[in-house]
Image (cartoon, rainbow, N blue to C red; front, side):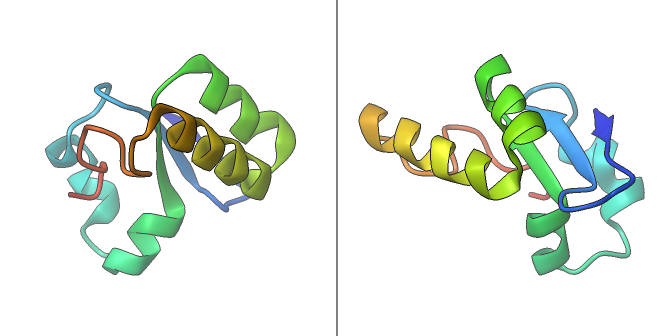
Length: 83
């Protein structure tokens, strides 16, 4: 897990690296909306690079294009860490 003290998002979690139970200590006092905005799961090194170098909106744009090309939905095949 990467902790971003600047926020937006505050936590970047590689998919499959932490379960929702592992994240419970972080998420227990957060609303579902805050969890969606503050804890982001990434599926690949490319997604992580886009998130860290291009700003969060650039990452979201890149990810949406990638999912569209692969004909997947934005949530991917795994549940979010906040689930």
